[in-house]
Image (cartoon, rainbow, N blue to C red; front, side, top):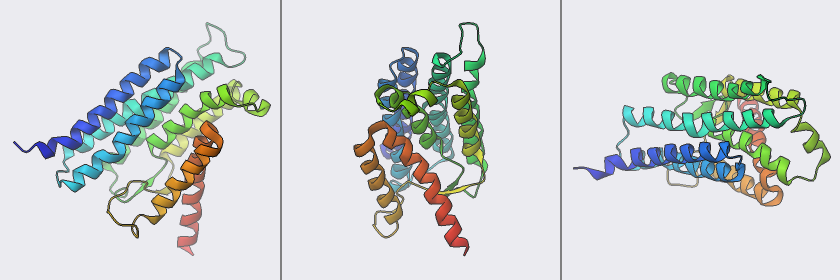
Amino acid sequence: MNFKKHIPNLITLLNLFCGCIAIVFAFQRDFEMAFFFVCLGIFLDFFDGFFARLFKVSSPLGLQLDSLADMVTSGVVPGTIMYFMLKSSSGMTETNLLPFLGFIVTLGSCFRLANFNIDERQTDSFIGLPTPANALFILSLPLILKYSDSIIALELLTNHAFLLLITLLSAYVLNAEIPLFSLKIKKMNFADNKLQIFFLLFSVLLIVLFQYLGMALSILCYVLLSVLINKFQKK
């Protein structure tokens, strides 16, 4: 029995397991623990493909498992978080159905993952924001609200209109025809991964300096940097 061929799929299933745990914490309004388990799931998602390539055991099954796991960790969890943020926002009542629109994030994630599996253009880069990046952005919002001293952040992140705008923009950017560079390290050398390494180090710096706000800023910088790279490459 070749145990190596099962390692990537096991890592993918652990990602799914982390997503399931994150959902439980989200419903308990423990957004910090939900954030932690989503981060752990994304960390595992970062390496399942790496080990599949390392052991040369990539398979169609692994591709499907990866998307299904991401659907929970990076699709259902952020939709749930947005639901609770909308439910707690200004102007909401117990009978208001508006918070359910937070699950538009989940719908956008589902469409993006399904499209990714059949889009042959996304082998070395992404078109549209990857679901893990979008999940980190959404999950950082309630923690920014909790720990930020900014009155502007407090007003925006408790305003249902602003939260709905983020929800709609999230679903759009997930599926927009915007080429974004891949953050996955596919070859074990610096030359082929210098952009990824630079951006990851820059993101770590932002997170150290600004904590959860730094996480949201790093996702915004990822999109903006990709747009700038595309613009200069066309010239």
